[in-house]
Length: 157
Image (cartoon, rainbow, N blue to C red; front, side, top):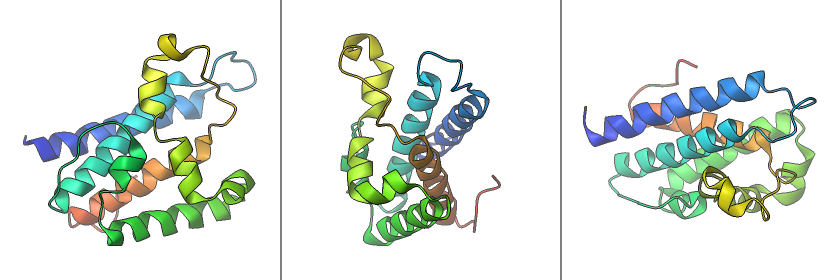
C-alpha cells in the first residue's frame, strides 16, 4: 500500500472509531468529554485533508486543521464548506451559524494536538466550546470529498 492509500485508510478507520465512540458516549453520566472521539475524529479530519491535498498534487505537514485546509483547492473548499453548512443548517445548529464556518473551523483547528496531550493542557482545556456535530459532520464531508477524488461518487457510509 502506498502513502496515499495509507492516508485514506487510516482516516477511514479513525473516523469510524471516533464516530462509534461518540454514538455510544453517555453525555449525561460521564464526567469527562469524549476524548477518544475528539482525538480520533480530529486526526481523521487532518488525514482526509492531507489526502485531498495530495490527490490535488500538493503536500502538507503539521496538525493545524485550518492551515491544512487552506492548502486544498478552491473547488474542494467550496464543496466542503457548502456541504457542511447545508448539513448543520438542516440540523438547526444555532451555535455554528452564530459563529460561522471560518470561526468554527479555527476554534477546532488544534483539537488533535491539544487533546492527545491533555495531561499537558489540563488547566487550559474546556469541552464547553467544542461543537461535536461540526467535527462529526466535517469528517463525513471530508470523507465524501476524498471518495469523489478517488473517482467514486460517494462513500459507502
